[in-house]
Amino acid sequence: MTDAAAMMPAAGTSHSLHAKAQARTRMLAIDALRGLVMLFMLVDHVRETFFLHVQVGDPMDPLTTPPELFFTRISSMVCAPVFVFLTGLSAWLYGQSHSHGEVSRFLLKRGFFLVLLELTMVNFAWNATFVPPTLWLQVIWAIGLSMIILAALIHMPRAVLAALGLAIVGGHNLLDGIVLTADSQFFEIWSILHQRSFLEITEHTRARTTYPILPWIGLMALGYCAGPWFARDADPAQRARRLLSLGLGLFVGFILIRYLNVYGDRPWSTMEDGLRTFMSFMSLTKYPPSLMFLMPTVGVGLLLLAWFQQLEGRPVLHVLSLYGGAPMFFYVVHLLVLKALYLIAVQIWGMNQGNYYGFDHLAGVWMWAGILSVILYYPTRWFAQVKQRRRDIAWLKYF
Image 1 (cartoon, rainbow, N blue to C red):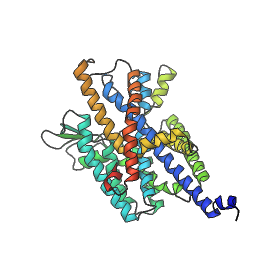
Image 2: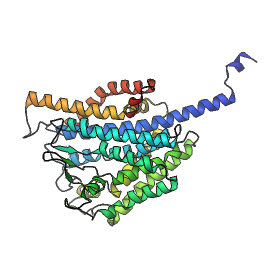
Image 3: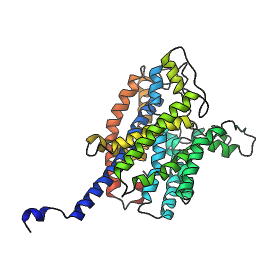
Image 4: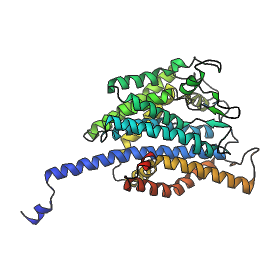
């Protein structure tokens, strides 16, 4: 054997290295997409912290909301749908090296952990006291409960689970007319599933079901069903075609259904000019997420995922994947940092916007979101690297 031949890898080794590179790119793309939506979320949370004096309805009112604020808010629309879909997808990927029972147990434990996190630290970060008078049951609560339910649903055949997920996502708006009052025996469960309400817990404490969970359950189930597209032996080219086709299909379907004004959200209307008409068209219901809300946001996520898979070796993919590699760590830390910054600003400058401290211009929101994304990159990178190195520490995987 010549020296040159000795330095060449065997054919099987070359195939193995290529497969590992493809798997690395696949996982990097998923983490990068998760990281990107975390940065969009950061913009929205800076807005909710330092621009709260300019009230934004839900959904945004195209008649009264300034366009620049409307489109800042709309930039965060992809966050929850993409994150929930990727949670289901990640659960399937976890199952590639674990049994169904192990996946169920992990989903149960992480789900309960997220619910507890929402009720304690996350609510503390959004309120002035550790036990606030109102517990806001938001996205982490919804993801946690959806994971708990997915722990049981994954034992269904994949086709049945996909059909159930599609039925929930596509059909839950048929339930919009069901509105229960507090004297109904099903009020609490219906409020958790599909109706935003206040739930009286004690004489001094109540909870707000900001994120009713029914459509999120369906979306997470669909993310789980998409898992085989990302299997170790799946063809990357075929996966890219599927992601592009489905992403574009969701976009086109959204435009057609929304234009017809027949189903999936409250009607849009023609306004005094084209911009306001477009704002009415895009004024979509997030709480709970309507079919019209989910179609374009998930579509954008799938298109980005297909694109990110083509960016192998690009530094931007690596940077974004570090944010997405420790999403819960980033989520908790950024809320605590925003709370600390707000309290410091109040101590220095006082309430300069009536009952709030806030920026005079929306540009301050984007500027500080950019600054914080850089500052938070370093602790998030450190934690993500610790997660990769210390797989023997079980609790790290919950972040």
